[in-house]
Amino acid sequence: MSGWLSRARDALSGRTAETVPEPIQIPCLCGRTIETTRRESFQRVLCKSCGEPFFILPLDVYPRPVLKKVRPAKVARVASPSKLAVPVDRTTPRDSPTVKESTKSVIAAQVPDLKQKMERASQTVRRQFTPLRIIVVSLVMVLGLTGWWQRNRAALSRAEGDYTVAVEVGNTALQKKDFLGAATEFERAVHAVDLLRRTDIAAEQARQRLRELTAVNALLQASLPEILVSARLAKQKSDAVTAESNFAHLHVGRWIVLQTEIASSSSNNKQFTWDQRLQIEEDVMSFMVSLPAFLKIPAIVSSTRLASADSGGPANAPVAADQNRDSASNSDPNSESNTDGSGSREIIFASQIKSLRWNISESQWDLELNPTTGFLWSNFDLLIAAGLIPDELRTEEQLKTLLLEQSRWIGVAP
Image (tube, rainbow, N blue to C red):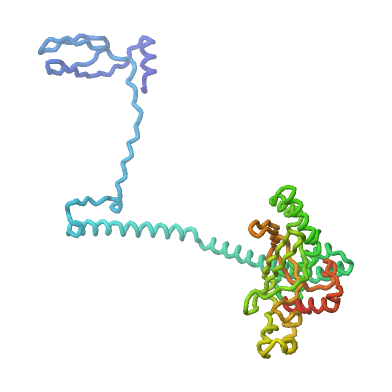
C-alpha cells in the first residue's frame, strides 16, 4: 500500500492526484469480452453484440493492498531405497528370476545405506574421544586409583593399630569383670582383623572371645524348667499361641550355654546331634539340635560295641574298650579324651534361642536354637561368668581339659 498517504493528501488538498490507467475486461453472457479503461468517474458500457449494459465503478483513490508473502510448502522427503517396499505379485513364485532380481536390488540398495550409518556412528564416537579428553580421563583415573590405594593403605595401617590396642584394653576389661566394655573392645578388634582378612590363631582368638562375651552379656534369664512351667501356665490360661508369643517377647535372642553329651547321628561318626527331652509332670520340652559348630568335633574312632565284637565276648568288652581308648589317645590326644565309649562326646556349647513351638502331634514343646550362632566354648573364666561352675561331677581341672580340647578343635588353642 505504498503511496496511499500521498494520494489521500493530494485528494483532500484539492490537487489532482496522479492517475494510472487501469484496463479492465468484463465477460458478457453472450460470450464476448468487453475491454475498456476505468475512469475517474463511473461509466455505463453496452455490449456491442447483445446490448447488455454494464456499470463500471470509478478509480479508487486508495492503492490495492499488497498480499503477504507465503512460504513455500515443504517438499515431502522421498523414502530411501532401503525403506521402499518391493511390489511383488502374489501369484509370482518366490524363486522366480523377477523376485530374485528385486530382492537383490533392494539388498544392494540397503548395503550402502548401512555402511553410511556405521561410518556416521563411528565418526561420532571418534569425535567424542579426542586426544585431550583421553588424557584428562587417564589423569583422573590415575589420581583416583592412587587416592584409593593410599586410603586403603592408611585404613590397613590403622586396623593394625586398632587391633593391638583393642585386644589390650579388652583383656584389661576382662580382668576387671567389665564384660560389656570388653565386648566393645573385642568387637573393634574383630572388625580390624576382618578388614585385614586375617585367619591366624590370634585373629581367631579375638573372634572366639567376642562370641563368648556376646553370649555372657545376653544370657537366658530363666532356666529351662522355669520356661517349661511358664509355657504350661500360659497355655492353660489362654492358648499355645499366647504362650509362644510370651516366650518370643521374653527369651528369643537370648543365649544359652550347655554342658551336655552329644551322640553321633550317622554310622560313620562324622556328624553329631543333641537330642534331649525335659519333662516336668505331664509337660515335655524336646531339643533336637544339629549345629554347624558340631562339624568341627573329630569323629569317634572306637566304641564299646566294636571292642566287644573284636574281643569275642561281652566279658572282655570293658578291657578292650579301655585298650582302644588308650591307643587312640596315644595316637590322637584330641579324639577320645571325652568319649564314653558308646558313640557320644561331652561338650560345652552356646547358642542363641530362636523359638518355642507347641507340637500338637507329639503334645510337647519344641525348643529351637539358631544354628548360625552356635559355637563351642573355650574360655574357663567366661564359662564361670556364664554360670557353669565346677561340681562333684566335673572338677575344675576336668573342665579346663575339656575346654582346651575344644579350643584345639576350633583352632584357637594357644
